[in-house]
Length: 281
Image (cartoon, rainbow, N blue to C red):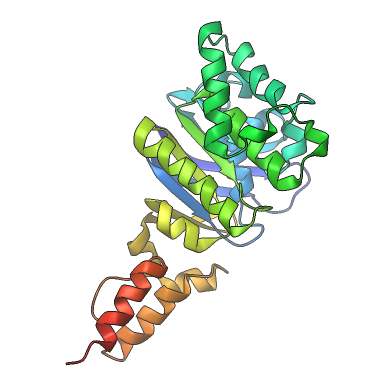
């Protein structure tokens, strides 16, 4: 479980708070999507969960962030990494090896995973990320999207209780982006891994996440199940968050008295809505 109580942080030399009084509980097995406009504080929140804030980025820190009972201000990132794995936007800064296989082996060996388990974990992690064919490749030869998948594979191989990802599909095409979210869904549903993901592709979040948290100027302004959060469309738009077009269409149809069903969250649900609206009386 993750518990944030009145969590705040101001980077050294900054005028305003990057995090401002955040209260949030993330239950075990949750799949939480974190959204907000640029500068809302999403990445800083990820840093706070991992312990990078306040241990590496200095500044004014207050409140509390507890990860599986550990206070992130008292436990260093290397301690927290035993239960919480992170994939940040700066993929190259996370890489420690020159070959894909070695990148995944590095974490497994350092975490003391039994030798007879290592081969299976490497193979499974590569397959889950859809990059089995890259196992022997030099990381320097890979595209940005491929390196992103390597970083995800290296974290999933460790099987942490919690995985935090900061815009993991930023350099991926739509098919690869979906593959990443399908992998996260499998980890969440089959293995009980808690997932927290910062993502700009709102349709993906609405389809795969169970809950959404919305940030604006360092504050948490909305949090709840996906349909409930999308009901506050005006608040989301004011915070610079785009909502799915099918949801916007549904709201317009509701206002005209043409539709009374649930808000669609993806294209399949949008198609079902339109079939209902256009069905002959």
